[in-house]
Amino acid sequence: MKWLSLIILTTLAACSGTRALQASKTVPYATLEQTVQPGSSTREQVRTALGDSTSIRFDSGNEVWMYNYPAAAGAQGEYVILFGGDGVVQKVRSGEVYRVKR
Image 1 (tube, one colour):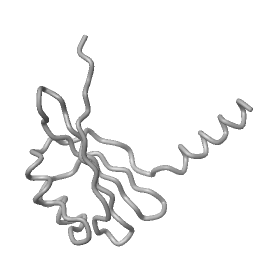
Image 2 (cartoon, one colour):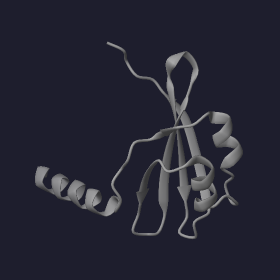
Image 3 (cartoon, helix red, strand yellow):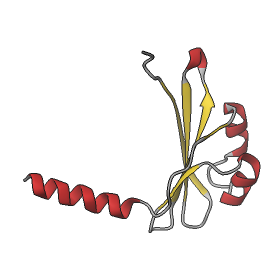
């Protein structure tokens, strides 16, 4: 059973993306909201307005980009954009990420 799990995880990792990750770029949340419009914004419009950031391209043609934004009380937020194969924003997701300070 452990071998089967390992094979499945390896296969998923191999199929998940074809582009190496780069550091996420930090952008104000208001700028992200104004720039990224699901159903109408394109990759080129987003790249021109926000610059390059962390991205993963899938074999299906879909692509996910991730930006960071400063959030309340020293937390950091993540803003994730899903582009369809046609290069248009399909969905966005955002949320604060809390890190434990040691």
